[in-house]
Length: 115
Image (cartoon, rainbow, N blue to C red; front, side, top):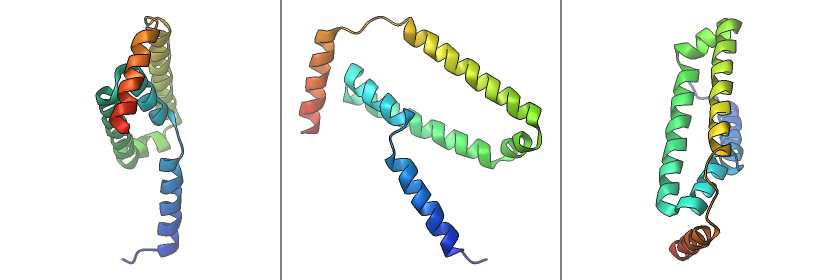
């Protein structure tokens, strides 16, 4: 079985643009770094990577086939995801406000760690 180079090149370019474009994971890591520091941000990045691997595994496994074959199953997974995102949004809105002085101190820590 030979590798189709034109399809691989297209996959490679798509992967580069996907990784290079800022998305929810990038904004989550930046927000975590500003609010909690560099160490917490590294955990946020690791969590995002694990989530991406789980999603890719589920999409390429039998779960992906079941969802593709059954619109009802796809709708259920979609609604569960929407409910979870709503829950996270409500938790975020009900969270305590950020202390500006602590925020400036954590920003200074990040600046000195990266320079």
